[in-house]
Image (cartoon, rainbow, N blue to C red; front, top):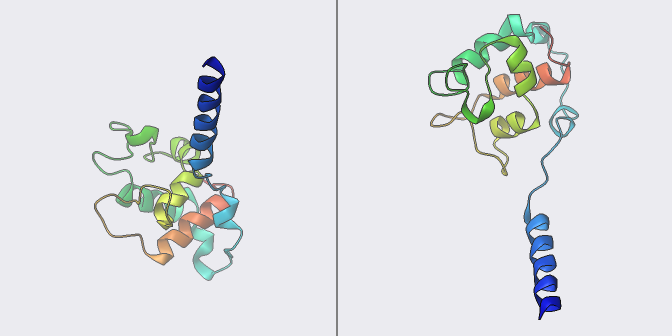
Length: 126
C-alpha cells in the first residue's frame, strides 16, 4: 500500500511539473527584433521608457511604489530595471501563458512594445 501511495505521489508530481508552462527568457522576445530605427536612440529610461511605463503600467493601483502589484514597481529606474523581465515582456506581447497587460486596457501598440523590447535588449539604458 505504501509503495502504491508513493508511486501515485511521484506520478502526480511529475504530471504537475510537466503541466507548468516554461517561462520564456528575455531573448525569446529580443532575438527577433532589430533596434536600429531612427528613434530607437530614445529607448532609454529618461527618454521614452519612463513615460511609457508611467502612462501604461505604473498608474494608480498597478505597478507603482504604493500598490506594487505582483511585486513590480515601474515608477523609477532602479525598480523598473529590476522588475521588467521576461514575464513583463510576455504580458505586453500577450502571446499566451501570461496575464495580458495592461489590465483592463487595449494591448499596447506595436511601436510601444518595440520600444520596451529594445530597452530590454539594450540592457535597460538609463
